[in-house]
Image (tube, rainbow, N blue to C red; front, side, top):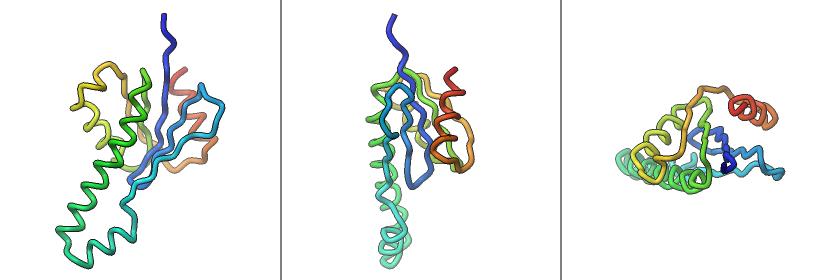
Length: 124
């Protein structure tokens, strides 16, 4: 029987904290490249450009998170915004993730300790 590899991801549209309770190291963080400065710069040119830029950068952000998920059997996506649901929908369309069990749960802003406890409780 193979060992189950579980990953919790607390995320919003600006960053994602990847929490693997099996490793003793600090949780990994993936940041979106779409920040306030990028938004302002694109918006100064046109609103349409800003929306296109946000979509492209969100796609790249979700792809980076998806690449990290490929090594796991069970994944919990949680956080305060709908970013977790957007990522879930992207992953469901990708056949690479057909064998990965993905759960989505709402959560508020949390400290790192609270995030770890939330993930631990979910996978118990």
